[in-house]
Length: 151
Image (tube, rainbow, N blue to C red; front, side):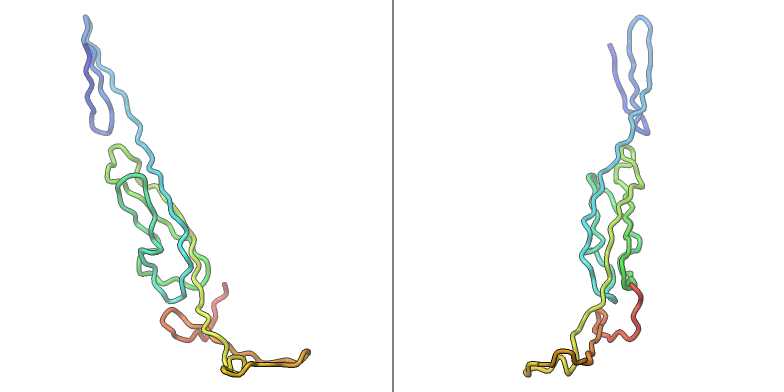
């Protein structure tokens, strides 16, 4: 006759009853959750990170902590986001798994200025002639960008 009991830490204890009683303890290894994170769409400089960008998923219940966190405003360019996962069931699953994704912070191109943007007139020009072009960039709040960061 035999019986088994699950002990703290996921160990399993087997007790075999025969002419000589014996007890064996086996350590059940913890499982590693599967983490996934679809790359978020680019956002405009000046917009804070939200749950729309920080949306990693796991194969088991638990929670994520993100670096950088929700509300962070990143500089223009490409940034790596990191999510660290803690499962609800730490007895049977490994904690501390990470997932990464990249996000690009873009400037908002608000268009060309006159004389290029001269509606309702259609602009024409002669081949070989130089034409000045004026343009502007804005952040997520519509503020003009006067100093560009190197991307």
